[in-house]
Length: 215
Image (cartoon, rainbow, N blue to C red; front, side, top):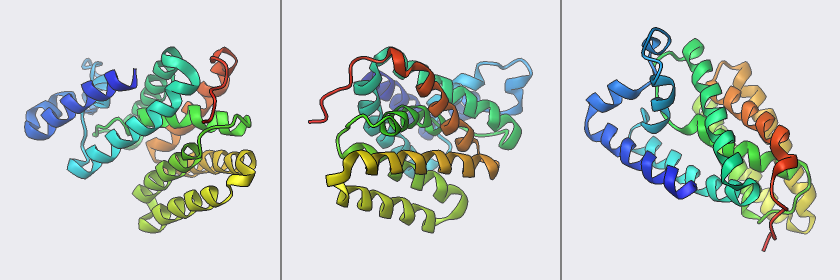
């Protein structure tokens, strides 16, 4: 599922960058609430952050997507990805009426990993680090480079705490929830998406497959 969504999103995102009319036709605008309903979904397949934003969103889709799909399976992966994405898009109509990007949907994948970390499921060391990198990138969009460096620093600390992997993972998960709350309080749609992803993951976790081997 990660590979399929990655391939489709990459194709449409590159097309949107190369042909601005494609981005204009698919991005979220107020018209999405007035007849052009498809924009609420198609905005998740194009990017408004230029080349750097596109590369970042796709990289985290691949990284968190693989981790999340291994955890929850393809069905709950889809539910979390598009559930959080749509929650973010609806918040976007209120706070940022025009925009595009799959970052809000990636928040759903982060939510799956966060709930697993909070539940004490042993995951690869990369999992809590990826969540903190992602949160740092989101926070940097509101509070600048210092927030990104804080996320990177947290990831380094988690890696250093590998002998206490479960406790470090729970701290990383709690930090991600706090980041979502801070972003939502600041009126950033990613905060709503991240909290929605956590809520979806918490509701669906009893139906996930058996926890994977962290090796």
